[in-house]
Image 1 (cartoon, helix red, strand yellow):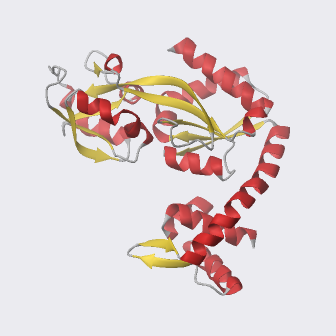
Image 2 (cartoon, rainbow, N blue to C red):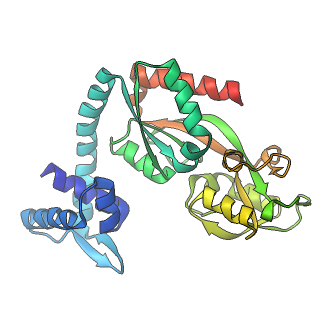
Image 3 (cartoon, rainbow, N blue to C red):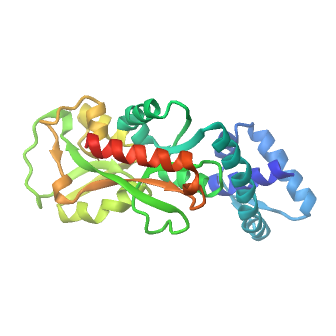
Length: 285
């Protein structure tokens, strides 16, 4: 029964059978069978199709609202107790962080904490936060501001400057306030929500939006237009700092934050990891 309820929760988060099956690492057929078993047990329709996506019915939403905190507490009980006793950290990380400077930073921390086993999961910030809430991850290193995440404890680790990669890597002459069309991350990104207003003030206009900063940067390098990306992404792809327009001093930065449930912060392994990561990022900044 518990795995069926977990499946309904995954479906409510993802909105599609294929995404739920990917998250749970089971087949789409297994997802359908678990939901059907729940509907038979409760004698209620719990999901309904809307185009290519799946939505919860009124009964499905009521069930999710009731079981979410219970399942979260069960995960907390066993996940944190077991992981803490083994010295294991289950960490959700924003894709662009883990793909750029994050991997090296985490390896350096691992060298400082050799007794700890690190398990990483790369997702978009919104997914990382949802899985911290559900108890699947112990903590997260992600982007964006914490104004809407009041149920979680969040600390800013650093701010990463945003930069312009000129199209085709040709030197760009641009004056602040002058209209500059760019390719950048889409609206639902935690990063965009944190600096979207500052972009407008500088005269930067996003004409194309993508889900990945690395895809944005690669299009600029190929010549499809100028890109607005974090400096770590540009450096990872080998773009020279001399070609970049650094907008950090103009207030265009991506906040990088450490997030966990409030109860998790009291675990020694989590507190030690936070202190080590904060110190490392301040030293290497």
